[in-house]
Length: 120
Image (cartoon, rainbow, N blue to C red; front, side, top):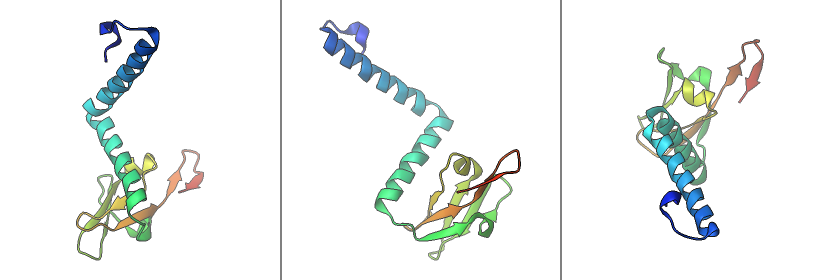
């Protein structure tokens, strides 16, 4: 798919160039640990929203703050729901249980530097 390696008409070259750019973007995303983690989390949230209904809405204040930037909440099956502050800042507010297929939506408020609140 590398456009420099093709000997074809401009339409095929444009298609190959577009495919090359998509592959390059995917490689850049997946080769970086942090961007891959964000990508995986977004894909998981999309899948969860499509496949699993939200079992419960949980306020962030009801979750345990682990003092390391992560929050946990117990599931009725004995598993836990886990979410990080980074996830919440990236507007990812869906967590799945570590054992079963239940999901929760975390309700929280983003504090701006001006002390204005934005409920999510």
